[in-house]
Image (cartoon, rainbow, N blue to C red; front, side):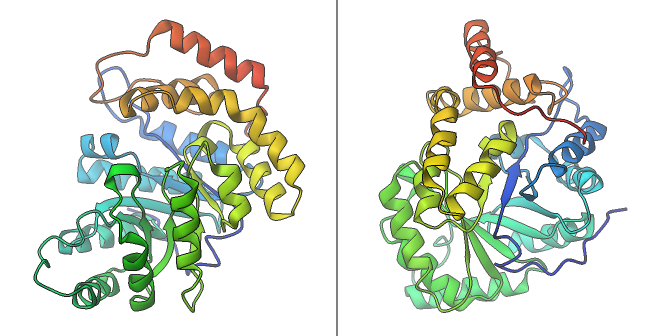
Length: 322
């Protein structure tokens, strides 16, 4: 049985710290190592500034998991969290089809869901923007958990997105925040951030970019929802805290220290990036195995060596149980 949380999740409750986006551990045969999920959650939960964990956020990985596996990942992660820490789960595209799944996520222990807006216009082409948004607001109101909207980047980003998400935020009280996307385009971030802050109610803006995290936090991010926090949780938490306290030279120094690692992460395609994250988390004893389901090509030995050397040279704070 799941361990459903009784926490009331609001924009305020997801602000003020970091959410770590984790990866699922697999063995060599592609089976999920559920006990290891609880273990890695326990280690991350000990770190100052960690508000909670986000699961099933990697699109490629999520598509390889069955519905029951995704729910068991939520249950296993919940076992490792402290009371009061939040568990976010990604359910993919927002549609009528996910309503039942969101209810199952809640029963398994999730506190809020992350969903993508990429196909919100499908099926409503003949409606005006106002009609589409009213339909979507009705849909979000039916969901039994609060919603964090994950914004797109680059070619996946539509020109009118800022206007649409701002209007949706005004329509639906269930929308409590926005994953601001991994886009390193600071103009996009600033445009979205200031548009959302024009809405007359609290909304949490959670930057997730690696390369532009320093800039985005200085613009005014309310928290961090980041894969980078998976391999450098102490440092990302310290970067967030220094930025929020106005200690910009300290924040810049932390960002500069992380830059060699960020450069490796941002220099490859999506599958290679995932394998780099897996190798880094495994090297840091957060992920019991670097194996992935659905990726047959291993990480290049030279790249793996470079990654490990970079992590060691940076001198990231050790991950421990205490």
